[in-house]
Length: 475
Image (cartoon, rainbow, N blue to C red; front, top):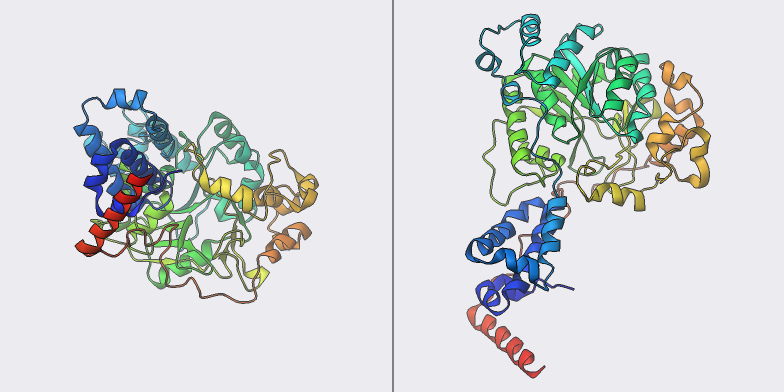
């Protein structure tokens, strides 16, 4: 066991001299804890580690031969990263500087597509996006440039692609203007047949939640990002567009039922200059901080209820934004504190399962592991389908909603709550009242971490230190 004692806070220089490797071990544990939970405290400990490495000339030998678990902790740190230093789109595509990157290109989307289709410097993802645009279906008159986007990869999600796309098509615009960012070969091949060829090849990574909407914005496209772990109860387009125009708002993001926390599983982006600059700022921060959680960064860059740094960020202009209705429209199950819903079944627009696997790209997957152990609707049976999911009352919501035997649920716009199993799942999370206990409080797992013990007067500090030394000498 390791304890980060009060001496390490008040007299770090003295502790470092007394036991340098023990001190380094404790600081590494603190840095690792911050990286995987409350990231705003990471740099205060990471800087101490870097200084130690710079000052210690034989650090490699120390790591290799020390009895302290330094090498093991550093290995864990590498697994704490949530993305790699790789992007599917080029820097020019992400910055919108296509004219500079591709001399001779012009402003028309069609002409850009014809030009870049023959250019080696355009990324595969960008060429796929341009190829997908002519395959889009009709657009609503009030939002002629709107598209729906999501990403998909892995057998757990790929096997639900057919019904996900079919349900979206049954509702109209969400399916006819859906673009899938397919992040493995199986997903791409399935998408070609299940989504009308509107498929973009890419590689797995959480940064895709920002890169695809950003590139779309540069092409003049408004986007609705929806995580794949949702069920479309009705076409969300009218509600989203009406809400955006009321502000007007350039960003709409889903939120928590009983807390002032956002959830970037459902986001509307209007293709404005402010949104482009803001998205680019979020992307750059995430890229240079690979341990950072995308949702925390999203909230921090809105200057809302979460932080990603101890000091204030130099934020880009924050576009006008608002939260989508988390009470009865864009709702969630109550598998985590602050979630659930209240109201009427027929007013639910999107049901977000909170699958909790946004960290799967790391070697840790803390949110997914927590959900599997404590969530209400969980199952390790990854082949669960249809009625076989209902054994023992344990089932992932993804499998429950997309694994029913009633095919009309996915091929027609029938109300999903008419299905008995889905209705029971929805009602199990409906609440009679909305608690206000969490409203107004910051979000995050370690809120107030920097509120250390109050500064001790010098005489009190010396008295404590003397007692510690005397006790150590007598042992």
